Image 1: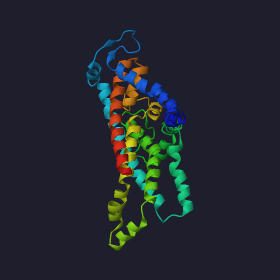
Image 2 (image 1 turned 60 degrees about the vertical axis):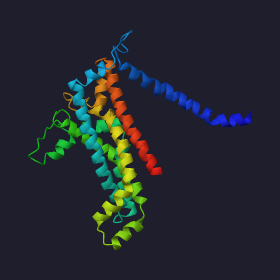
Image 3 (image 1 turned 30 degrees about the vertical axis):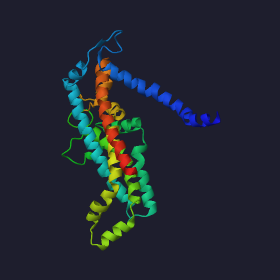
Length: 293
């Protein structure tokens, strides 16, 4: 009896967590996938099964295609900029030219954007980007730039501004991860390279990058998924406007479900987004296995 209890103990400990995951994750996901194959989901007592009709309709929807385009731009620009800035600041914090106190102060300053919640970030930037805000005031020294620029209301500027804000509040994650990787690289490798006549650029390309490759790939994939699902900051800053200029797939799903009450199309878009995230997650898990091996 005691032996059986010991064998089943791990499963009993995991049971509550597994049950919660099934109730709050697996079942809702299955319901959303099911809604994508019917017409009039939630709002109709007897929704009609339409098969793949919703998927055909959504790819014919110009608003959805525009949301995909905005999402691709938003994700690619954000992930690449996060990587570049994260690497730059991590290398600055890892350099020997600054003292410990200076590095500590810099580390605190650099990490601040990541500490702020989405609501704080949105309110902060919304105030600064107003026509009478500090951004236009600082730019007023340049006569070529309009002093009353509507940064979030201008269709041509809004998406670029949203990308900038997302980059600003997301790069510290890269910085911390890359800094940890840099501190784990043996100094002997750089000393050997210096003896062989390698310059700083060559050492970076042939030592730093290869050593950091597993970390860079892992955090890039995680950031890809997070940015793909980004909603809070965009919604609080622009609501997807002006004229859908900053509408990403996540914003499109929200609008379809809670503004237009078209749960079937919202579920269809959510299912497509889920499939993309699953493929990236599978690639991420495989990458992690390679790192452990």
